[in-house]
Every structure is written in structure tokens, then in C-alpha cells.
Length: 485
Image 1 (cartoon, rainbow, N blue to C red):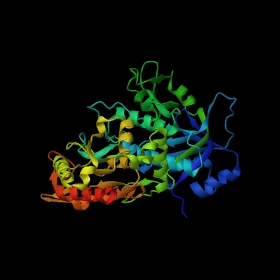
Image 2 (image 1 turned 90 degrees about the vertical axis):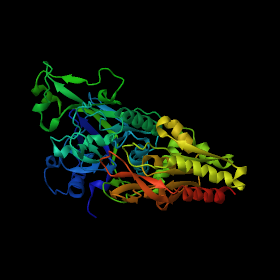
Image 3 (image 1 turned 120 degrees about the vertical axis):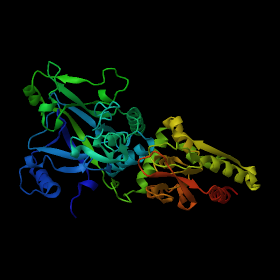
Image 4 (image 1 turned 120 degrees about the horizontal axis):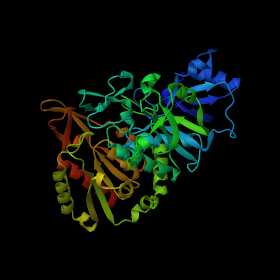
């Protein structure tokens, strides 16, 4: 079987990182070097110094271009001793580039699910590891008038589902994938908070980049190949990502360029145990289906609910006297996908339908419009542990179904796109993710769409689905009859 870095994961012991941010693996064991040469790099007897620019895996679960491509420098030497000035981290460290971290649903499924699987795969206790983020959300000065396309360097670009106002194209700096155009402050907050929920408040580490300035405040970056920075591994957030720090853009001063060159290859920190890669569960750009295992999402669900002391909610759901129907309320002006156009009419018709049914009048039923932006993360998760039926469009909101009770129902309405005037098509891009959740009954709502309302002044062709409210209400009614009567 041919080695493929996209679906590979690694467990390394004694990995180090230099001050210019390169990962190094120190070994004099010829058996290890031969294995890497013949099975990973496939370079036979080439000098190991030729391997530096060959990626062996990825640290971003959703593969998009070369962001997160992990390169490792092999050093034919012993690792520094703990008696030296080099710091050592004892706990197992997971390396990660974040993806769409400004959205809780995406961070759960597109980041944390893969992390949980890697630690289960290598049998690492969940209380014995920590994150090391290799990216910075606020990777450069991005005031409203700054270009976000990295148009000066095509290798640094990625295609995102939005139009860049500076270029009129869907091209953005690849580092924008860390937030995926969501609010950067929320991206930092969500990723740190959710990571700490998983690791029970273990410190989160981050690789921070610092501009190199001389004593006259002149940047030396233009003299450096590949825009190298001096880096430092420290407790997150980095100064650039610390929105509460007035001195966010910290710099490092050196007397001259030669002094920097002497420092950049120094080892700053080593890790006793390191895990990285995508492993068995990964997303690949432009693939209709990505690999997913039920045990991965089940472990993520249990870990979060237990650490938040909410697991009892889903275990005691049968004792609740109220049936909760959640309907996701998403702005018609949302930049992130389409929504249900006729939500108010749907809620009104659903209420009338349920009130007419005599048998259901003995049951307390609540219809809850869910506006996620108005709730904290804890409130969001807590709410979904009590939602029996959830009506939503594809995307991040649907991922909250991960926390719904046993034998709950997800009515999954589609994304719709305008083809031409009075013509549209709809599809279900991530419904396969939900089919892996055994606690959930997933209903494909494609047949509920009767038309689509085109958005005005929208550069992408999203249109908002208009549901047949009678048909949708009857579907909910049939679920309630089946479950509770």
C-alpha cells in the first residue's frame, strides 16, 4: 500500500522545535532512519538533509491546499538532555492547525473529533495531554483596508466559500482558514474554551511568531527567505491573538541580521511525546463523503457532556415531562450558507397543527426558536441535551445534534443554490456526518422544499429554501405520535 500523508498519523517521542519554528527529530538509530527513508520519504539512501521539505502528514483535519502540511527535519544526533537549557514538556502534546474555529459546530466536528480519535488510537488518557496550536488566528495586521488575499504569493492562497471584496474572487490567505472569515476574537475564545473543556483546563500551548526588528525599529523580515520569524512556544493566546492585551504586536529586537541567523536554529523546547496527523478520520476538499467512525463522535459527545456535568441530562431524558422542538433561526443576511426563508410561517403552522391534535394536548410541547449567537457555549450544549426534534439547515448548527438525547430526531433541510432565473437545485453536503450518530434519527428534508428565495446583492448563488409548512408540520406530528402516543 502506497504511503499517503493525507491519511497518516504519527506518535513521536522526543520531538523538538527550533526558534525559527522548525520541528526536528534527533536520532542516531540507523534502524529508525532506514524506516523513515524507505517507508515514509521513499528516498532510499539519500542524505537525510534532503527530507526537510517533504510533508509526512497534516495537522489540519480538513485538508485544503498545503495548509497544515507537516515537515520534519531529521537530525543525526542525540536529543538535548534535560540538564541543558532546553525546556521539556512531559505531557503528550497534540499538534493542530485550526479550521473554522470561529464557529462552535465546526470546531467540534472539524477539529476536536479528529483529536479525540487520535488519542483513542494511541491509547492516551484524556487527562494526560495538551494542545499545541501551530497557527495564529490574527496572523497579520488585518484592518478593514488590508488585503486578505495574499495576492503577492499564490502558494499562500486558498479558495473559500466567500467573495474577497479586494479581488472579486474567492481567494484568501490560507491562514484565513483558521477562522474561516468568522469573527477572529470569537475564534480565539471558542478554540481555547472548547479545548480546555476537552482537556479539563490543562494549559493550551501555541507557537507564536514575532517580527524581527533591529535597534532602529526596521523590520529584517524582507531580508529573510520564506518570511521566517522568530518563534516561541508559550501558553495561549499569543500576543497577536490576545485581544485584551494593549501591547498585542510584540517584536523581538536583534542587533543585526547575523545575530538572528545564529539564533534561528537553536532548539527552544522539546516534547517527550507528540501526536499529529489525520489518521482514520479525515476531511478532504471537494470529496462528497469523508471518513467518519461512530466511535469517534460518541467519544467526543461523552467527553464534553461528562466534563460539563451534563451527561445526566441525556440519561434522564425519558423522565422529562416536556417535549422540546428546536428550530434553528439563522439570519437571512448570513454570509455562511443559506437558511429557511419562511421560518415564521413554519412556526405558526406547526403550533396550529399540534394544538389541533387531541391526544397531544395531554403532553407539554414547546417550540423553541434557537438563536445560537445569543447563548454561551455552556448554554448551547445544555439546551441541546433537552431538544427532542431539531429542524435545521446543513452546516455548523446541525452539528449541535451531537448533544441531543437518545432516540431524538434531526430534520435536515438542504442547502439551495440558484442556477438561473426561477431555477435552483438543493443538496445535502454533510448529512453523512449525522448518519454516524447512533443516538439520532436523521430525516432528509429535501422533499420538504417547494421553492427557493434568491438573495439580492449576493455574489455567491445562495438562495434560501421555502419549506412546505403543511408537509413539515405533518412530519413533526407523525414523529410525536410515534414516540409519545
